[in-house]
Amino acid sequence: MAIERKALISDNVVVNVILIDTDIDYTPPNGETMIDAADAGPGDEWDGSKFIKDQTNQGPYPAHLDE
Image 1 (tube, one colour):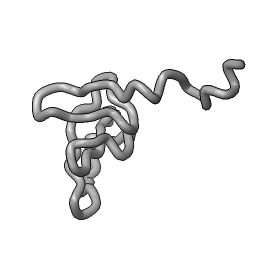
Image 2 (cartoon, helix red, strand yellow):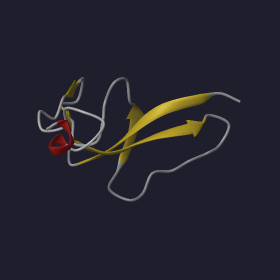
Image 3 (tube, one colour):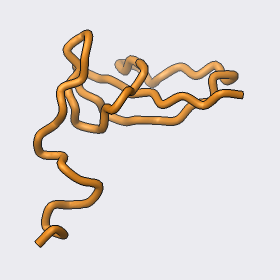
């Protein structure tokens, strides 16, 4: 069993990042593509070869909690 981090992409935007067991045959929902996530997070753009970070997503918690 191996676990991999995958990005689910819809309309060139990461809609979710999942951990998946490579022994399981998983098919993403209609309209989504699954690729290796690297350092991607929800909201990041996929340009076909690399992820472009979502500049509004700067931390693990909402920005107002930084204040």
